[in-house]
Length: 331
Length: 270
Image (cartoon, rainbow over all chains, first blue to last red; front, top):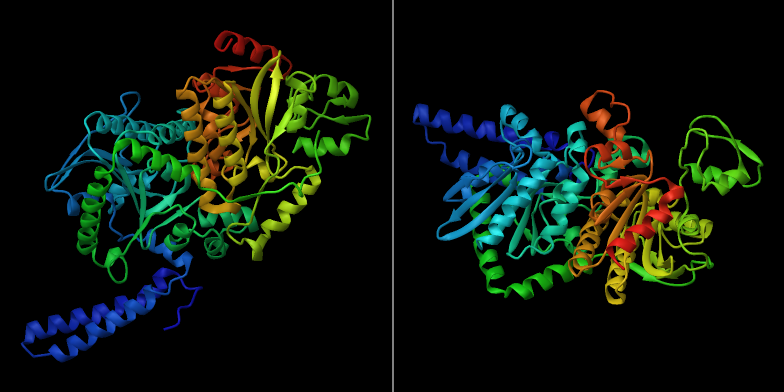
């Protein structure tokens, strides 16, 4: 099936939603009347699967950014419920406030004790407002760092979930040193003496994401992205037109496969057919297995080796040539 | 930016201050280190000019000037990053938005990195990230202080995508290694220092000095205004604002920079 690159994700999803509505009607009718519609139902289910696969496997980068921002996409609060057997939230940065945009706390999967740091967006409007749509303030970054130091002290591996459009652009955020908060976090995380697995579960919005994701392994869900600037912001700068975000999304190489080619992302985690929002519990299960095996692997690496590898990874990111020819000589 | 204008003004005897409109005589202007004597606006300096203004005469030796950016993402179709780079390189006779090297400050050797706002707004891509990381490594080996001067409105350079973002980690961990081994790092924030540069190495100095009235912060003021839909208070995101909120150690005027750096190095290093 050909996908129209100009269509928004919402438009693309319309036929699926219609098919699903028909399926529901059939199921209800069959249940209510006792008429056997199994063949018809199976046929429709197959058709839905086919359409879903056709649409979601051929999305453009911009459509995938929209998928990463999908209102029904599971987010940190969902994953806390779906993945962990226990979660004790620890709040506050001890200086200024508690930033609800970032959840921090003790978490358990079976016997595996972890420290969770997760940017949360919320799934209802009320929650979204409370969590500031996933945009952290400096106190959030300071909280995350303070809690990571607790994890370091007591030997708990850190798992972080990245999902933010970016660090919050506001007056208070600047007054309290947004740039300094992010810089300090990067500075400390680069050498924190505990295994750290970071997973981008939706939006990896620039410095706002980086403030919690300097890790031994940086992984990403199939329909998540990481970018230096939002496609809209990039388009506004390049062409003074934020509606050209689709072009910018192409250029920025922000989708998982491209990021892996650039040496930034370690693992890409597959989502259920059609994206995480179509089957959150399955997504939770996939993530749970991935987290358990990856953390165990990181724990098996001696700490000095782990820190060396973390350092090496970031030391080597960058592409340049070393040539005299371009320069005429300054002094 | 002022510096580009200044290039055009080289052939004129005088020009009007872009901030206050006062008449400035070009020769005098150069003698007072590119500062308007009427409103004390500090015009942006090129890296070469910074070196001349602060450090011992003829002491600068450039390092790694051969490192050049490449078009990693293939930004070609829309804006042609390669051509842009080529044009800027030949115009400014340097490969990217930074000059690094060694200088003498009152005969004490120091490693310096100075970003250049004329070159894609002093933004940090692979080259800036690599050259900054290297000076911290060299300085560690040589046992010398590091001084950076940033004029970077552009933050992480979008033309190199997420690679630029990762330069924030690369440079920050270089600072960490250097500082944790006892190194002295002084960061000078000139006008403007924003976004990815401010949120990485520039914020990580043992000592942070700002130039008067520089624009300093994370998010650009226009984006903040659009987000919160109100106008910003006067003086927002200036050096003075950051000093008041506790994020810089001091504001030093350009003409006092050399003597302040000398004193700091004397107290902390010698």
